[in-house]
Image (cartoon, rainbow, N blue to C red; front, side, top):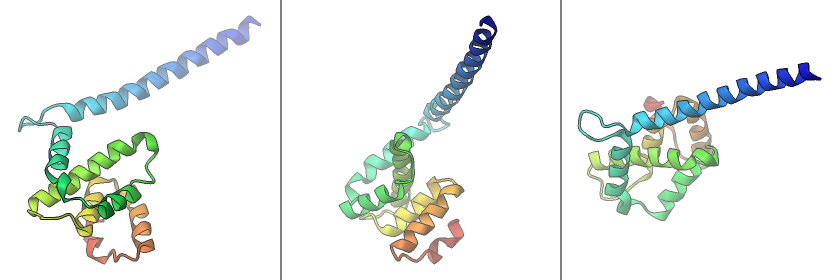
Length: 140
């Protein structure tokens, strides 16, 4: 009886250490994003800046499109993904001195803010909405 309990403790210890390392990795990544860069602002500060600067440009239709695009992201990480994508879209809008947000900026911002593995979902969603992906092909 003592032999199986010792193995249980060893396996449980390995599991806990592994989970601590995984959690620490994600916490460290968040910490690195919060560190200020050369300009004095962090990556997350710039995201917040662009979101605040362009908040008034978003219509409900465009917010719904953004929500649909972040739908495949697990709910636990959806807010982080939405902020990252909205920050990139806001940066594009500020650089273009846009008076209103449009579909082209949203799609371009999504492509630039997300990893390549998420682009399949975007292409599928755009086809379902009957939106031509040809103008964005160079961004994929």
